[in-house]
Length: 81
Image 1 (tube, one colour):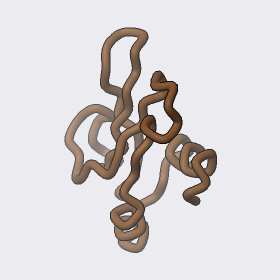
Image 2 (cartoon, helix red, strand yellow):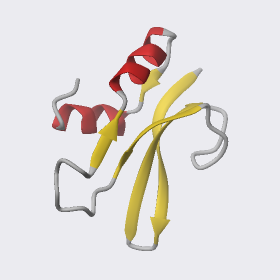
Image 3 (cartoon, rainbow, N blue to C red):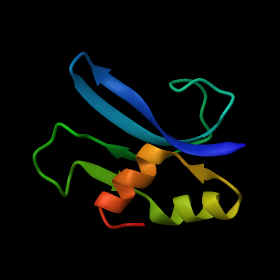
Image 4 (cartoon, helix red, strand yellow):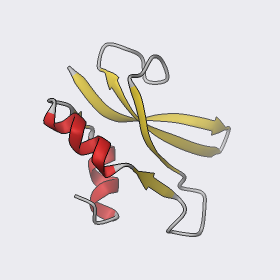
């Protein structure tokens, strides 16, 4: 099964997340299929702290990928879902 989920990057107490399409069997920060966006909760500017390629997400969802709870919540907050 394929899932669209967050992968934590950045240093201690300075998180940065990549939004990845990956197999559920691979580790959180391990092998992935495609990078579709990023989320930076530290940035103050609300327009530059989040990016996601809606076309690629819709493509993967049409192929059977499932959004994780966190990605779904972030998309709802940004009014993309």
